[in-house]
Image (tube, rainbow, N blue to C red; front, side, top):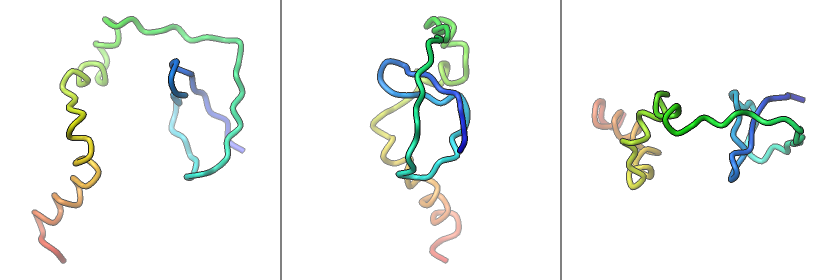
Length: 79
């Protein structure tokens, strides 16, 4: 069994470290009586994720799934 730290952001559980689990693997979630401090919006904007977030284009997310494969085909052709 593996233990990892995470927090609930009000919508979903956000891991604080990389998860080493497989698809459909069962999890046991324990809710603690401890809280983390929320990062104010102005603080979040100082992180790389916060800074780059303003450039996010959700309409392009579907294309990201195959971007690497398309780039390889463009560069090397169908091998």
